[in-house]
Image 1: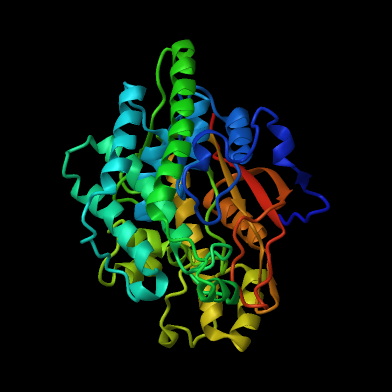
Image 2 (image 1 turned 135 degrees about the horizontal axis):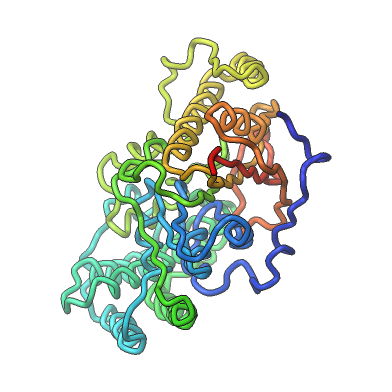
Length: 429
């Protein structure tokens, strides 16, 4: 069943949840992340299809937006993501501590101790001198060296939180343009470099960000604590380790009450490249691990051209027609799109497996223009889901009103102006 914008529901999610003051309230502000969805979307879905005490899943959880919103509604949450930064962000955003004052004091103590730490730490980042000026390199080395060595043995929850605070500083003192998602030294940045005007004060920014993030985390924890007294329990958020959206390994059959997610878009962003600076400084990347992650991500562009000679076929007529047209122009790009839908099919099948009968699955996705050829991604995802066994409950859309970072893109790729919300239901009670 194909639905166009003129017959679908206009969700206007920002209007449906007036209780949310802005997109960065509480811990949503902690650390930037590529292609986050606004908190209004999971909040709306969970109010409609979730209940306190339930367990929800986000199989592409990224920075944890849906999991934060679930906990604020008294719902337990599980997240899956192959990005090694995701687990760290989730702990920083949703982790609870018993003594807020002690936690804050220890975090601020670390900020001061980094000033005296020797700058001996060197990340395994290629072309380090190209990306960071001497003062920035020195101060980042002091910060990450201290946190990764942890010479005074601060608790894990303190170190984890401070590593996120430190990571949030990296792009602010980098020569790459902060207004472009992927690391790129633009003309604007080259001019600033020539004028010696690029920010290098990593220690100063660490102190500034730590205070802001602490305020938000403490407000979040107090909110959860107060609501917990009403609920009689404290909801939890956990990452499912050694899992992947295409396998949902370590999640039992029919154990999840609802799923809400926003998967990567076909041909939209190179997620790991966007945050590679942070991953290297955090010592979460070494050797060829970045290449490995780029190969594993849904919608990977790391395909050998030798595998792209044949005309790709998925099995959906309209999609196969588009793939054939793209293949005539760009063989590799056509197979990238094919792999994306194959990966999404595997993920949707796993979502069906882990959902309880009668449960709901919300998926936010955008259509694409690839080599000037329109890909009706939401329609194809809908057909895949229905072929898996889901029934379609609602199809709607929401307009994208702001982009924090500009993707550096080929002119034939197009910008995604609206996002489609697909609500599916697994047959059952």
